[in-house]
Amino acid sequence: MEVEQIYGKALDLGSREFRHGNFSKALKIYARGISIGDTRNKKEGTYKTHKHYSNKYKTLVDCRSACFQKLELFDRALDDSNFLISIDKYGTKGYLRKAKILCLTGNQKAALTTLHYAAKRIQMGMQKYGKQLRVNKKLFGQLLEERSRLAEKLNFIIIANSEGKEHLKRIESKTDFVSIFPLEVISEVIRYLDQKDILSGLTVSHAWNQAFTSLPQALKFPKLVKPISRKRFAKFMQFCNAVFENSCSHRFIDKLEIIPVRNDELSVFSQLSEASIRISHLSLSLRVIDNLKLLKLLDSNDDMRKLFGLLDFFALQMPLVEDQRGISYLLSYLLNCKALMLNLSGTRFSNSSENDNMKMVLPNLKRLYLNMIYPARAQRQDNSGIMRQIFQYVDMPSLVSIDLTDCVVINSDLVKAFNPGLKVLKLRRIPRLTVSSITMVLEDIGCKLESFSFIQDDLEHIVPETMQNMDLSIFENLRVLELEKTYITAVGLTKLLESTHGLLEKVSLASNGQLAFGYGPLSNRLLTTFSILPYHNFVACCPNLVSLSLVQCCNLDDHSISTLSKEIIDQGQPQNLKELDLSYNNLTSRALTFLFNRYSWLKLAILKVNGIYLSEEEVTFLTTRGFCTKIECRPVA
Image 1 (cartoon, helix red, strand yellow):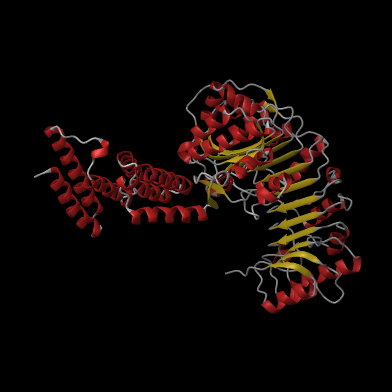
Image 2: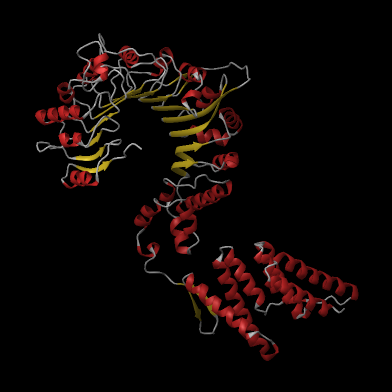
């Protein structure tokens, strides 16, 4: 059988399978036909040169490329189309196939360039060879139509110069904000674009690329994809380098939040450190790299140590391995840090017996946030060793704010972090710690708190706290008070409120077991007649209140709200109250009738009454009358 017959039979059999959707079988037939033909030509010594390839051979190559395309093997399909162009530079099939593949892979600009080059090349061949060059006019017409379609879609026009040579020119859109707005406006728009939007914008036009990469504002607070892979992060690093080079600005990023793909953490972290970019605020979330692995990286990498040493704010979430040096040594690389947020999860214990803790000082640290993350309260572990490392071996003399959650720390260790300049203290579920005990510690230090938030640990014994015989002057500058699950009594709370001298702007009380807001089951069990909160004193102590939250409070019912409303109206305060939360109490819609009666002057921005059923008519009435702008109401299922 002659070679041409082999090609013809392969085309017939392959086309039959292709029409029935059997692309893999068709591919094997086409490839086999090409292979047999090439082998036969070599044996017979008639291996064709490029300009003598037969039309059937070219068609076989195009069909094989089409099969690769259908099977989404785009690299192989592109190779075949390029080969077809190389053996038939004035043919249209190779160019059309290549353009189609490029469009399918999302590279329409390259497809347009390919078709425009093909049109110019074929037209030049027609002028040069005249009738000697045979061109399939139907396919050439399709090529020109596809070029026009892509040009219109991508905002290009085809212009011919005085010599008749065609070239592509981008149409400047009047609605293109890059061309009509000043750089100040463009930089403001860029602030709201995430990494995907910016990287896409770079490919729109040269003007967009030039505008984006000449604005250092684009790197003030870039929003990265979450989670981000090492390839995407590499593209972001390339964009950063382009911005720094074009804008001649310092290699500086103000805020950066990185949540890497689990298996790409080390690669992303290495790219960041090698980029030699100074970052002011860095937020990093790790799931594979723990504190010991991170410490090894810092010990062995100068760039990483430099990156950590220049941070002003560092937020880190990672798994924790407790040993004798992991945390304290890690903190030693953050000497210039002013705010530190640690979210540590899944405590494990190391087999290391090293015990070489050393005293260190973080002189600039002003804010410390430490949260121990556990899947459930029942799975909380003893993390006292980690706490001992932090509070015994790390001196933080400039702390202004401390925020601890689920930390097993004793008073003698915690007090080492306190100083007279402490303004904000938030303690959540700290074992063996109560409002009274922490107040006595603060008395000795002489702090003047401006914000105090305390959530007592569920496992503590019930001991009513009356705050008797205590110097509460530490609260004389207090503006924010939040108490949850404590055992402070009405007497104790009243004394605490009176010590604030009316400066309180926010009060939040939730699930305090010894604090009654009216007569009911709880008040009957309490020993003193002063257990019910005196509303007169409560309102009198809070003239500047902006936010009040009473959630899941004992005996807080419709009658209690009526009494509270009467005191507010009689005393004419607080005039600036904007937020009120009465969720999950024993209330009905009648409580709101008492609260917003005809004498009430309350104008709330937001009212939260979750756990209470309100009809649409009641919600509409409250909002249209101007009593509150927004109502949050989710009935209990």
